Image 1: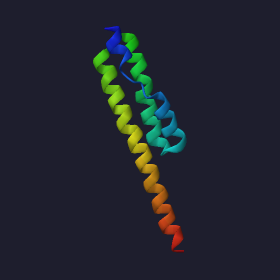
Image 2 (image 1 turned 135 degrees about the vertical axis):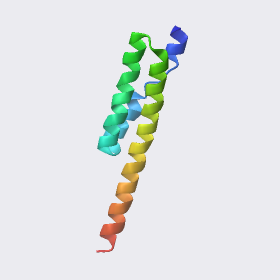
Image 3 (image 1 turned 90 degrees about the vertical axis):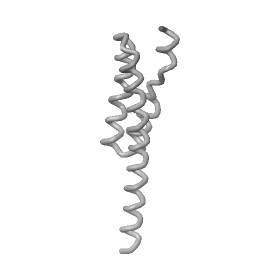
Length: 81
């Protein structure tokens, strides 16, 4: 049981990076799910922790893609002025 718990990544570092360098509102959601991984593991809910880890990964990618899209739109719109 402990080995299965140790292999579930909480993705905290990536979530914090998404908060500071990604799109902030989406990065906060990623951070929430990242924190949920540890709390679910402490409660013994391994399946719920795995779901939170997967959701954190999805929200982290979404934060970075949203930030890149926003920067691209900003550059395109202000480059034509």
